Length: 83
Image (cartoon, helix red, strand yellow):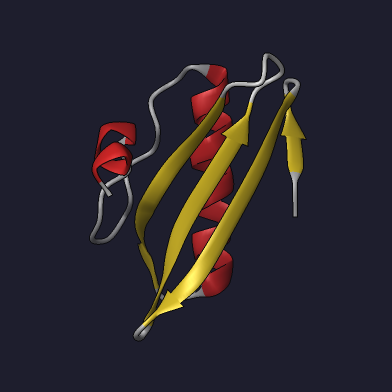
């Protein structure tokens, strides 16, 4: 599902990895610049992973710090470039 926030198209997602779900998000800004936030963290439920991906993507678009994952993993855009 694609969501829109302040003119940017956000595609949050979550996928299963073993017994956990991984949050990810891709963003396409109005000027055509695309950004992948990569793996944002691990969660016990698919719903929680998806909602965290939405929160991270909207924070990125707003230019505020991306929230920290409550469990293992990182939520740094720098880490996403190395994945």
